[in-house]
Length: 138
Image (tube, rainbow, N blue to C red; front, side, top):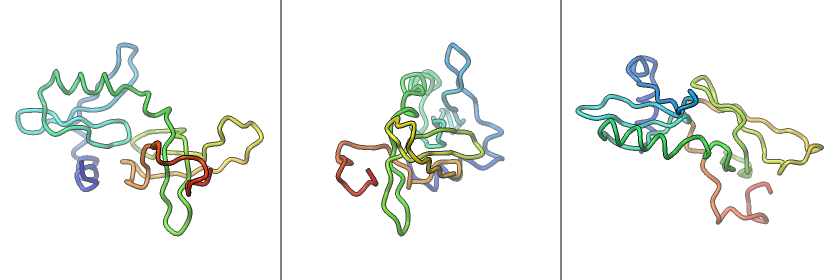
């Protein structure tokens, strides 16, 4: 879905009508936005996952998406600087906090970045083509 749609959907007025969807353990996994006869699905990063679908399909999409994607590496594209492999450390509707991926090294210097919510397009999932030795600050 487009960044413009994400930004429109994230306005405070629109969020008043968002329907939270939680897992069985109570953890929030996303929202369903009433849209026409159906519901658009939005993940915790504020990114729209579908156009209008029925209630059951919206719940199923959020359940299948879950939270595991938040533990995966991402790439943060930076204007005027090399892209970095990052990990998400915090997500809220106030902000998204990421840190340079330190691959678990306890003595690595910490570099954190605070991003707006919904997530900008500059934050994208790490892909196989983003291998070490490439331009991603690895």
